[in-house]
Amino acid sequence: MKIICIGRNYAEHTKELNNAIPEKPVVFLKPATALLKDNKPFYYPDWTNDLHYETEIVLRVSKQGKYVDEKFAHKYFDAVTVGIDFTARDLQNTQKAKGLPWEIAKAFDHSAVIGNIKPLSELAEWDEKGISFSLLLNGKQVQTGSTNDMMFSFGKIISYCSQFFTLQVGDLIYTGTPVGVGPVQREDRLEGFLETEKVFDFMIK
Ligand code: MG
Image (tube, rainbow, N blue to C red):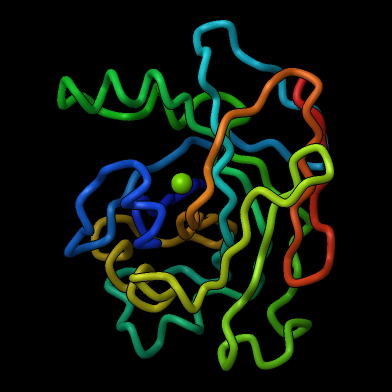
């Protein structure tokens, strides 16, 4: 499986990092070794001093697809959760300044935290009102978002990405983070919520 990630999909977050509003989705990948699930602790790496959380809605791909038309994109995912796209912001800034790829700052081991996956059928009317999500850091809410604020919808993301990468069953798509990203430290506790349901709860070690 692969992990497809979208960057700069919420306008306020894009501005907080002084990035331009993109005309097309900003896409990068993480390998399967990036996954961290089952509320296992995250061990702070020794090559960064500025590890940031980015809280994101994650889609699970349920059908193989290539060149998926936007209007059929809803047939290609069947479940959703909240995850963290961990980012070594110091490394990312260095890479960006040099015009180099982001992988060492974004795709490292356990950089893709995934919560308990919920079938879409359990989220009533989600497409009507968007999906809300939030992150608590040591019990205090530090990020909250709604997929209504995404610049590129699930359909647009799936259609765009499937031109380049064949979607396969079990792939995950991280759909971007809203405003409010920030650093974590050892002994921090992170709790993620999909609507009102807690889907992950883990420690930084
Ligand atoms: Mg992100």
